[in-house]
Image 1 (cartoon, rainbow, N blue to C red):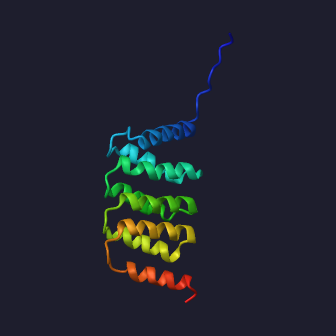
Image 2: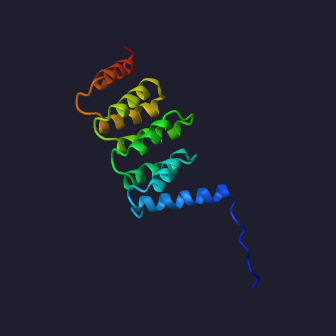
Image 3: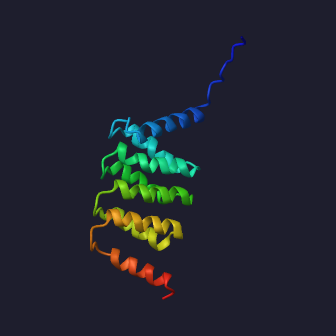
Length: 154
């Protein structure tokens, strides 16, 4: 039988493959919770061009980090500035499962996304706010009333 030789993967392909392996393990809960490397790898998948990969990363993130993990939240907040709508949407959704209830910085960033984002990101931000904002938290109700009024044409 002829022997086949696999070509070595380039560094970018190796890194991508490693990221996907970490992501798959994280989704199954097979990665040590709190592992900085796993958190970085999973967060980097939020920038993937494929929607299903970003969705898997959002699902995996709470399995690799504790709610309120400042490093993960900082990474997610930075991704809100990404030019790709899908990455911003995934970061917003992930904030809803990672940020602590009442986290003022996260609530304020989500409120700004509601003001400035497209409809899909705005909807994701409203859902994330529901998970993160405390009942009656300053500015939340007012912003939602403004958004509701502008959608009614008022």
